[in-house]
Length: 176
Image (tube, rainbow, N blue to C red; front, side, top):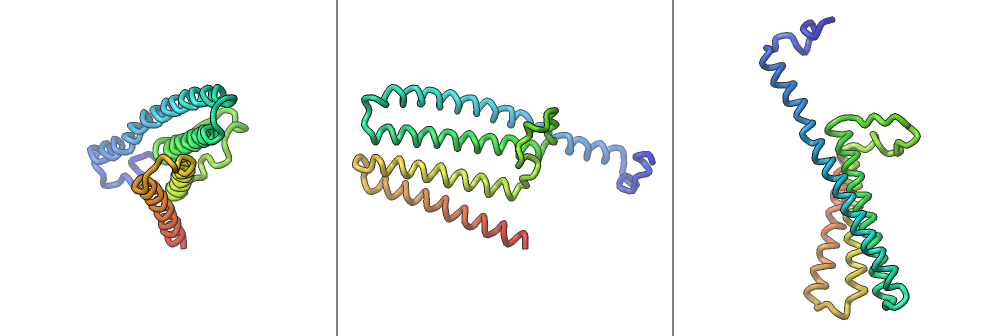
């Protein structure tokens, strides 16, 4: 069967088919975004290494609270890296093309299985976790904060938590 015999193509002009193909191929314009995110991941790695070196240097002489805050900052960076990786892989596979990996033993279990709704929930969960770590860092340094700063920090975190709950509820209602 030739493409012109295909029922979807009957009655369409060459211009219309060309226009639709151009729109479909425009998804590749997103590919540089995902490449940029992989570069952002390298920047996060650089920041992680710099902070890790500083933390190791401070381990002998630094106050206990500062070491804990340093460790929380490293956890924060690792969560941010996970978030970038998730968006990179799931976004590329959802909107550009499937990843064809030669060695399928390296393929992560969740790749190709996360839909747009799942990605939104995972992103929101990561954002809430990152916000919780920031809030914990703030509480570790509470004596240097005024009530206004503390209220804003808690308020922003509560906003993320409520937004995540509403998003999860909306996704659940949509799947019913």
